[in-house]
Amino acid sequence: MKSILNVKTHCLEIKKSVFFSYLYPVVFIKDVEQHLESLKTRHPNANHFCYAYLLGEQQDIQKSDDDGEPQHTAGLPILNVLKKNQLTDILCVVVREFGGIKLGAGGLVRAYTKAASEVVKTAIFTEKKAMMMAEISADFHYSGKLEVFLRENTEIDHIEYTSFVCYHIVFETQLNEFISDKVRDLTEGQSTVVPIEYFSRYQ
Image: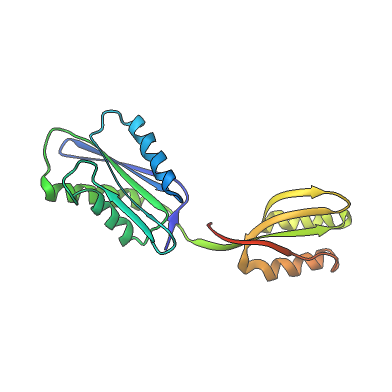
């Protein structure tokens, strides 16, 4: 499964109706609600806010909503686009401003499918990586070269200064051996990488 890191948008006009598509990375259902409320403020003249979302590593939670369009003509087509592209932790909202011409059930399915597909095409996908947070305590004597290495190869969460320099770093779990070996080399065997937490996130 994959997701996105950044919000994507697309605009499509079909028979005078304008379809604004939005693609959001989401983690919690409350995120979905916040995005919907924001869009209703942004599009006060819109008639429908149809959407679908998938959450969880195996698309465990999924929902679609036609928001007043005929049943299964909007939310479900959007959901099918997300599932077809093997996306998760993602929300797609298609906002429709009615142009006065009815599209019919088949026309609506095609329109919402195209609106969702077009915004998905603009996205850059990312996969969830196994990550770890770790701690390294080092003598000030080694901190110069060690910090340069850590900034180039890890994400430094924060640094504490006591009688030693203590680094809290985040990196992909698969790099643990490489980073541990390098830390030992740079500190002449005086410091080691001590794991604090393991987690997953999109990189």
